[in-house]
Length: 221
Length: 221
DNA sequence: TTTCACTTTGCGGAATTCCGTAAAATAATG
DNA sequence: CATTATTTTACGGAATTCCGCAAAGTGAAA
Image 1 (spheres, rainbow over the protein chains, first blue to last red):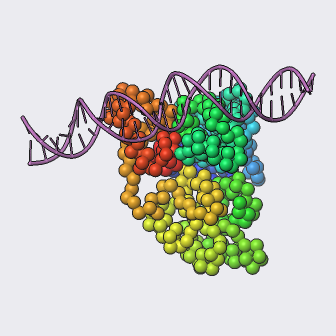
Image 2 (spheres, rainbow over the protein chains, first blue to last red; image 1 turned 30 degrees about the horizontal axis):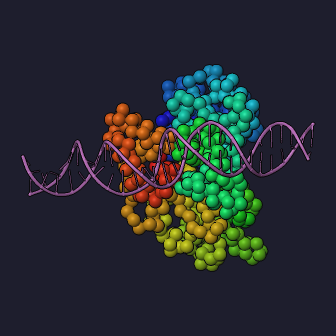
Image 3 (cartoon, each protein chain N blue to C red; image 1 turned 120 degrees about the vertical axis):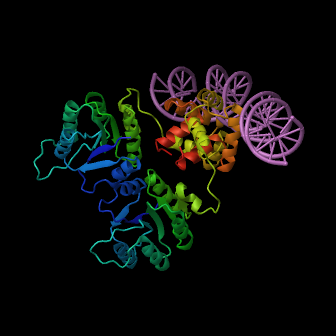
């Protein structure tokens, strides 16, 4: 796992969640800054000290205040960092979920992971870190479509409910009966099969077990 | 769902995660305090105003500072609250995972839910809130044993590996072949079946899907 | 109303899992 | 070495899931 990580996040209440997550991951040196400029300086300094950061976790938007800044946004910082220190991995952690922005960052700017701040943000963040550590890229499920040109993943409440019952140990037949009782439709075994099949394809799952595992990992159930 | 909720959490960086989770749950009035005393006062005040809180989410340990406090810990607060306002539901949200503490809180103090701050803390927290709203109790999987007197479940590395591959989408046959290739034993399909059966019984799972779901919830894979 | 597109349901066979029984292999014991 | 216990493997049938095809139902447009 990474040993030395820098977190760049403007919120004064330094996101405890991030910190805790990083601790959980066993990261030893965790530094936090509240300005992009500080991030840049710290990164540069660390390299001079021959103890470079291995990972930068950064927000995109930073509220501006009295302090004059060279970098006003996370994007500016990222651009320079990737130019000057291409070895430093970058994980973006932001509320921004516009697909175009994600796409640009991942493809043009060479960001290694994009995690949306959300209800599952921290879990996704640790996942992202794990993934990036293996030299792979990661993007939050809710913006994953940004990378595949394919239409957006369809997963609605019905699907969630279905998978929830499945992971609850019910057989397809039992789910069918349950849905009938609760007036949820479609509710035939056949339809349930069909829907699960669609979901398996969508999530590239080999079978129902795999599907449940994937969806649980995504935090959707 | 609950309408009016109080969050008592000392960290200056008001746990954004909790707040977001509560918003996601559709809770309208969310108040946050950083001292147990403030929590107590707010709860009392709300009752006088005829708009009582329906739920209190509280941490256990509060760092002490210059302010003199009547309640120095979450436990003290909880004890008084449950005595004076037994209708107010209480969810404990803490890093503390010692079983004895959980046991005491749940059984003696009448707490409605115990959620460990962890990688899945927020998800568990919303689960807990849902559960408590239905007048049931909830405890995080990792400390669930605290309530059952049974000794710790038997589950070894082989089992973990087995379930991991299962949740990875492999069929029992495929796992058998994989284990043979990797020199892991036992590796016959029959043995794998048998082992899974044992695990299903151990974890009271209806089928393999259920088993994987349970074990994933416990964080073992 | 008819047509057309789409969703839901039904059904049958292949594949897989589930479950019990039993043989074979291995380990433990005297 | 012989005996006993335990683990591993094999096998067969029942249950469930997987998968494709076709019929029935539904809603919108012509």
